[in-house]
Amino acid sequence: MSNSRPEPAWRVLLGYVRPHRRSLAAGALLSLATGATGLALPLVAQDLIASLSEDRAISGALLLMSALVVTNAAVGALGSYVLQRTAESVVLTARRSLTSSLLRLRISAVDATEPGDLLSRATSDTTLLRAMTTQSLVGLGTGGLTLLGTLVMMGLVDLVLLGVTVGVIALASAVLGVIVPMINRASRRAQESVGQMGAALERVLGALRTVKASGAERRERDAVHAAAEESWRQSVRAAKWQALAGNVAGLSMQIAFITVLAVGGARVATDAIDVGALVAFLLYVFYLMAPIQEVVGAITQYQVGAAAIGRIQEVDALPGEPDHSAAPLPAADEEPAAIAFEDVRFQYTPELPYVHHGVTFTVPPRGMTAFVGPSGAGKTTVFSLIERFYDPTDGRVLLDGKDVADWDIAELRAAIGYVEQDAPVLSGTLRENLLFGAPDTAEEALADVLVTTRLDALVARLPEGLDTVVGHRGTKLSGGERQRVAIARALLRRPRLLLLDEATSQLDAVNEAALRDAVTAAARETTVLVVAHRLSTVTSAERIVVMDAGRVLAVGTHSELVSGNPLYAELAATQFLSAVE
Ligand code: ADP
Ligand code: MG
Image 1 (cartoon, rainbow, N blue to C red):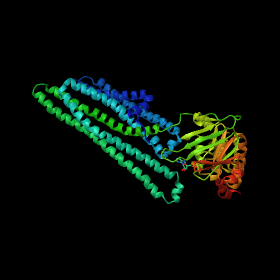
Image 2: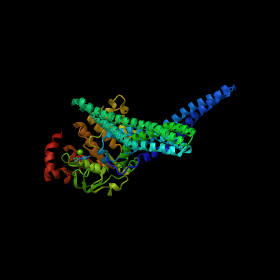
Image 3: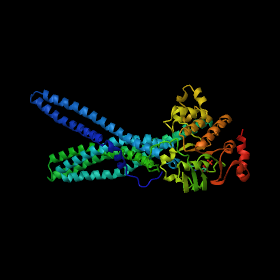
């Protein structure tokens, strides 16, 4: 994942904070108020003690003091609640923004990523913005203000001693300037390792049966552990630099104290200032400690958050589709679609060889067109280009004579029903799966499609019928059942173009024959493109496109091709025929 000159992290953070700026300001003000009421306490106490010695009634002062204590606690609690709440809102805003980006990603961008790593960016990295908001934004604000105020007061007492103090602070800042990038780097690596851990876990959990069957649990576990340990190592490293930064801040103040004492003593000796001024100045140096610690804490925490923002920005920088919601499905009376490929050349990435070397074919509306050819010929890629998961490197893909690149992407996809190769069933109920692409389907239409796809018997058998939960990736269904669910899902969209990519490969002979009838019936009303591996599916097609190694070798009917195309004749004689019942 690369990107050109990303926005600085603070600007990204401010973008997330903007919608919550009022509550952030309120939280910061409440924190300041807590500090102020805290500061007032010694004054009241002083008054109280004075009252004691003067034998005045102390009830008034006691009451005031109690009121202050209670107010201080209440304002403190409210302030910290408002701040935490704001920080959580900032995390929510970041998660919303990032997950929108994730769902908009182009398939080509997703190809180059690990889903588990993307997941960690949306869950783990965004969480780090919480501390970044409370500690770095607010800390920098309140700490910075107090620091400035104290420096101004110091300047009023003695400019020379102020110069000494600022000199020490500048020296400490130089040291911090070396430490701070280390925190960023270590945090960044820690988060990258969390991403690798997510990727390693996703790999195991996504293929748990194969992992177990291969006896690979230990090996896979070790890979996950290695990533977790690396994250630990890097986090510990970041913590070390953070602790060091805190110490540099503390030490610098002690050095400032000593230096001020030395220089101030000399100035008192030469009568440049009086002892009172020196004592006052030393008190201010003491007061400087807290805001300096706060500012340094803010800066180090900022580095941790900035590392997370860097990873979030990488996702935002990936190529995405324009933001869109689903377009309405085609009306019943809309004409079926026509498809044409015009000299399409295509490579998945610039580094990879071409998988289409000038593919050309035309498919008129209605009827069934079959794509056959050895695996790796580029059949699935044909469908991917029609759906605009990728754009041709060269040449054009036309739907109804219009370049798919010029279609509104939502309208293009609304016209198509697509059963991808190894189409997944999503976790959820059977009904949710069937209506996934057509949520407004009427019950009767659903019932019809259940019959044509022969799912009615399955539904009758399941304990909760259509509302049965089918498990993650449809693990509670057989391979054939999953395929029929996928086909039903596509049919329910009443598409103007139906794309079936080896959609019946796992069906038994009886179900395959039934589905073939359903597809043949569909082809009377819509345009159907199938990638088929069974001769039985292909023989009834109006047109068969024979592909090999990214080229169209021939287009024709079964009988034309059996005599006219050697590859087809060979395929028909070997691979296909075995599947014919
Ligand atoms: P078919 O469906 O005919 O078996 P495909 O269209 O799936 O063939 O693949 C054609 C070629 O493109 C294959 O060599 C395959 O390895 C490659 N390929 C497929 N998908 C991708 C992808 N997402 N990234 C890179 N290469 C791919
Ligand atoms: Mg394929």
